[in-house]
Amino acid sequence: MIQIPADLHPDCVPIAWLLGRWEGAGVGDYPTVEAFRFGQEVVFSYVPGKAYLAYTSRGWILDDDGNLVRPAAGEAGYWRPQPGGEVEVLLTHPTGFVEIYLGRVEPAKVELATRGVLKTETAKDYRAGHRLYGLVDGRLMYVYEMAAMGHELQPHLSAELQRVAGADQARS
Image 1: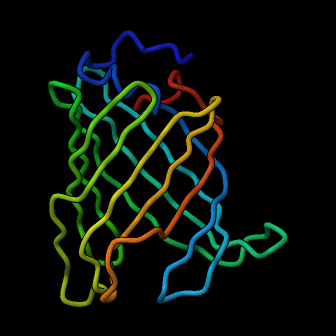
Image 2 (image 1 turned 45 degrees about the horizontal axis):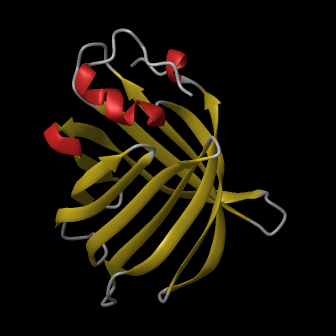
């Protein structure tokens, strides 16, 4: 079990299990792309006394042997726990869109759905997302569904990540 930092805002305790740096791999697929493998690093950190977690994610396309081919998607934002087990998540993408997710927090589980998406003129057609994160046997696992490029909401990514740095190193 994760040791909760003493200076973590009390509202963040229900999602403190996310704190740390996570690394691993996953798979992706969508009607508009060929199936692919990817590596990923995710970091959840906190600012002492602030009622949010900071979040960054970056990925790399991998070949069949697990070797890095090229950089892939990235995103950054904030996870803002709310009363009653709710959470608001704000994410920004370098490809030209911003997402607002609303979701529910349960012990070692967070489920999110987009409340809104804003795009620049040059961003791809992306309309909605759904994410499910869970802590399973000490691993961070997630699935991500999206509605984009004229397609309805459907599976896009899934990954399994291992914690490589803990909450004690997650202070921003």
